Length: 312
Ligand code: NAP
Image 1 (spheres, helix red, strand yellow):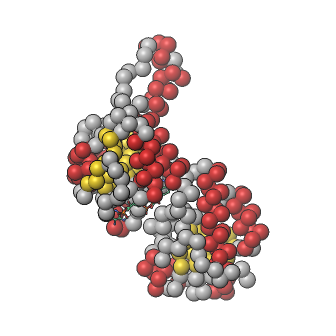
Image 2: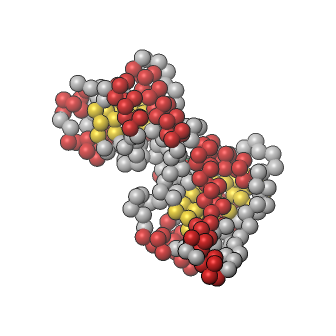
Image 3: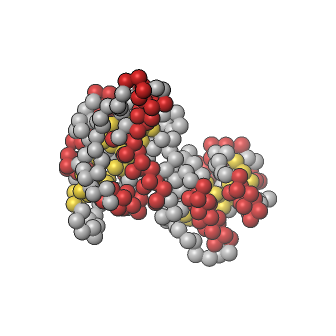
């Protein structure tokens, strides 16, 4: 009976290495755990988890010998950490290796949104350039003011990139950081009020739900652009859609949404929004590095060694 259960959609390379190293059982989602027979479930000590479906007390109750959940991803908001503690389950994640890719996507969406690169590409491809002439003017990026909501590992990489665009950097975090020349705000409304671009890089989960409230969105104002690479839950999505439709903010660049991948169809009608399918860390190189950290944590667990990147 296998001790390792691999949950989620992995690349062929990751699947092959996982198979060779741990001889695991593969299932698509925690939602199908209950379909495994009791003996199979009772043998599982390690879960390699990928995806955003909830993994909480109910799932842990189905796996009584579980001791490790090795998450594929830095954000572990889908895992109930209090339930893991109560069940004697350690959780690990994959921090740092994805910072650059996620920051790149944030900056890419900001450029794309402000310079209307998607629409301008269509203009050139469909012959409008030849038929109508120059593409209409859009908004400058370099030298403007950026606000980072959550100056953690990824937030800092985004800020570094935007600083090199000669932007004035402002940020919110729970505590002030050692960031000479950057301006700390204790309140997200004050941050939004000050900046042209507000980039959300908070953790997900209950504590940050709707952190970007209707009030924050209003404070950003009709020239402001919201970029979100964190989680759909950090933004009051209904308030955002209302503001985008009414032109009360200029636009948005979004890699994350509520109810992914079945996102609110109101987004499809908005041409002031750049939409990405939650692909922040989605490069061959970074996904390989994430898979390696996940397996290294599993290997450390099996050898009785210290976990590399524990979160509880
Ligand atoms: P991190 O280093 O832990 O930074 C998180 C930031 O959130 C910190 O600035 C932290 O404030 C702030 N924060 C945490 N709890 C908060 C609370 N209760 N209220 C207000 N602020 C709070 O995390 P990271 O590695 O940068 O990752 C950030 C998030 O990005 C992940 O959790 C994940 O959800 C998301 N992500 C998305 C993708 C994608 O593909 N789009 C990929 C990877 C990660 P302090 O600085 O004061 O601690």
